[in-house]
Image 1: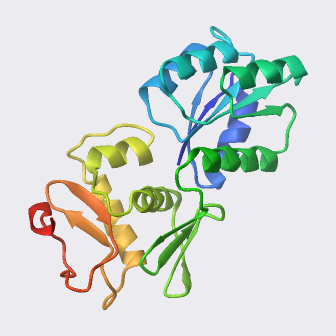
Image 2: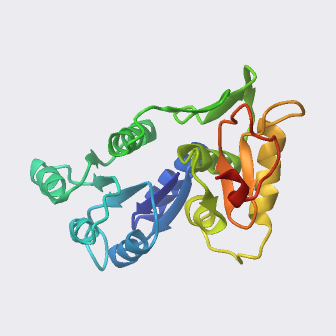
Length: 238
């Protein structure tokens, strides 16, 4: 999952960023309101951590413009004041939750998980495809009754694929949702990570649940009994 942190205090921003990355989120930061608004409007994020007191454009104005643009992304607002008036203003403008500074990282992470669950059509914290399961709270995967060790990027890729189970996702969709920065679409980095992921979630003799749709993208799918256990062309599948 991708999180945007809009915070002008570098120490606070780094504290949040480092903590969330340890939780296996992909995190981007903005140091002022104008930058944060531009990033929020023009990119996909699963949640935004938004400080109230920001240079160039305050957090309330940023939130108002995000909602005016039709973005329903969950927003957790931060404030050093923590007054009832600030909380009411933020919530009325469309904030999903509020957290006063100083705060413990564990509470921030828990509040983020909560607002993302509330905003998601998929309320469960466990994603399942065939006998593969992914715990989105503990950030661990299991198959064959064993825990599968994943890197941060492998986890992010698997979570995105499993949240879109039975849907074909293109390389550009994966780039946007899993990687922080755009890269050459001709790059083989996605193929490299797909291969690494397959080596961990599939083994000889097991069903192939991560399918390559040639020329289109990839799909996590529970294999039907009469389906071949090979990569396929999309026109042969439908």
